Image (cartoon, rainbow, N blue to C red):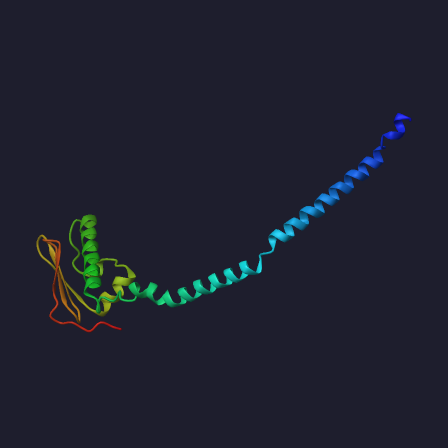
Length: 164
């Protein structure tokens, strides 16, 4: 037998390699297609989880917002005390930058949230020689900030019922 006849020629080798590559690509595509498709059980579990999450988010959403719903100083003394402390801090900042206390609260730039409540309910501001006081009378309490002692005192004689 001739040695040249037993060897395949180059065209046969290329054709054989191309066929093998196509067959392997087809097998790989078939495996990938079966793995990419979720089973019916996986679809049911995923749909159930999505429904549970959406339902709990719908039920819990008002509770998430609840802490932010009572930031009205006319209804909550703690918020009013915090706002009064913010104003006192702004007065002290003014004094540190200008060297004297402001003659009125109008000279101080207040955050919009605090300013809206302050505009509705007047805060009495009195300057003494070395200090100042802030007095805020609200429906539920009368708050007094003393600059000497850096304290807020509250007269909670009047209270209003909490909102439901």
